[in-house]
Image 1 (cartoon, rainbow over the protein chains, first blue to last red):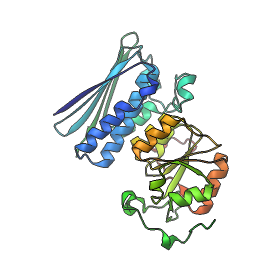
Image 2 (cartoon, rainbow over the protein chains, first blue to last red):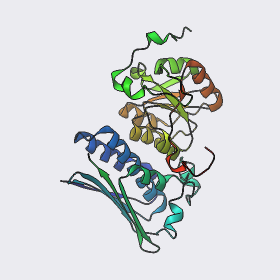
Image 3 (tube, each protein chain N blue to C red):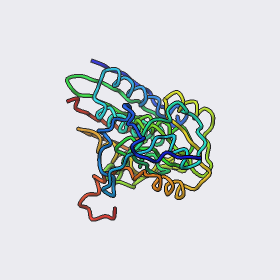
Image 4 (cartoon, rainbow over the protein chains, first blue to last red):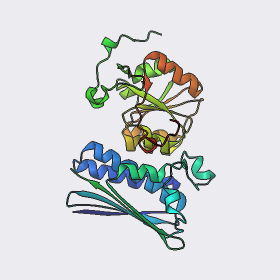
Length: 138
Length: 160
C-alpha cells in the first residue's frame, strides 16, 4: 500500500502543480496504465489548483490499495455554499489572479468528475471541503 | 527555406505511437501529422527549448488561453497554441504528456518557465503572429484540430 500526503498552501501559485507532478511520477514508476495516469493527473491538477485558488490551505492524500487509486482532498475552508452550482460547467468564483493564469473557467469540478470512477464532495461553509476521487486500476 | 511536405518523408516517432493517432480529425480526414521541425518552419518560430526533440511527429493542434479547457478537451498528444506564458502552461503539458507549446503574439515565458520545460522535455516555440494566423498556417501545413469530446454537453441541446 502507498500513502503520501501533500500539503497545499493558500495562494501557493509558485509551487502549483508540483504535488500533481509528483503523484504522476509515482504512478508512472509503479507502471500504472498511461490512460489511467492521465485521468488521475488531470483530476489531481485541477484539485490542486482549486486548493490554491479557493481554499485557506489544505492537503491532498494519495493512497493506492486493493486495486484503487484514491485521492483525498481536504481543506480548512472557507467551504462551498452551493456544491451543485459549483459542479456546473462555466460556473466560477475565481478572482482575477487565477483567471490571469489561465484558470477560473469553471471547468475544475466538471473536469474532476469526468475523469474519476467514483467522486464524492462534501462541503460546509466555515468548516471546509472534502473531496474523494477514486480511480479503478483495472 | 525548403519545407518537407511529402507525407512519405514523415516517419512516426515511436514515442508518439502511430496507432494512438490513427484516428480521423474533426473533419473526418486522416492526417499524416507534422514533425515539430516542420511546425517551426511553417510558423517561422523561434525554438526556445527542446531543439533535440524536433523530430517528434504531432497529429493535431488546439488553441486556448484557458488551461482548464486544455485539460478538459485535449484527448491526444497535440500541440497547444496559447497566449498564456507562465508555468501553468508547462504543468498542463506535463499532466497531458503534450510535447510542444507554441506561444503566439510574440510571447516569451520567463527563464524559469523555459528551464522547467527543458527539464520536462517539452518543446517551446515563440511566434510573432496572432493565434488566428498561426492556426491558419498550421492548418495549411497539414495539421488538423485536436479531436475533442464534449461529454457533458451531449444531449443538452447546447451549441457546440
